[in-house]
Image (cartoon, rainbow, N blue to C red; front, side, top):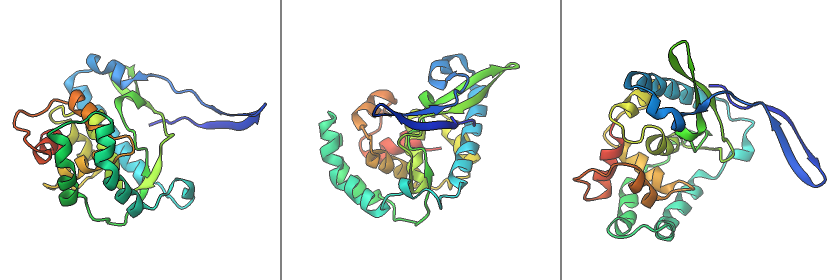
Length: 225
């Protein structure tokens, strides 16, 4: 997927600026309602393949984007309840957070990749070419970081596939993800640990399963491929 290319970066009269190439297309969020089911699946395959390429990039020269991953996860986990309360999350969900994170926060496997961290329909551009919708751009790398690859799936599941049946499996198959029973739980963990996590907003944005009595059932309802 094309991404903006840096042309220049400088400072003028105390103001820093960058000049980047402009990408063509409209946001996937804007055009989604115009795209049929078959084309949506094809686009998800392309997103999954592109995400695999992003995560395969060498990170040797990306030290400024790296964080102490163990410290980051611990800090996000410790502050999770407070952050969700501040964003308006109420009972019963807020009272389930600590136990859910204690049970399902994954052990650090040690792999590090370049993460976009905010992969969403609003940041994917598409164009209609020769009768088909194609991806024409990926923007907004401002919050990019180096970290565990599954952290990326939080924004993917909430803001790209949006619990629409079948889409997440297509994307993850193209990405090459391990589709085990614990994956939906790990995705929700990373959604809660995300820098910009807002579970109250997610509950308004995504359809809540009728049998979602706890965070485990919520995770399976939203993120089961």
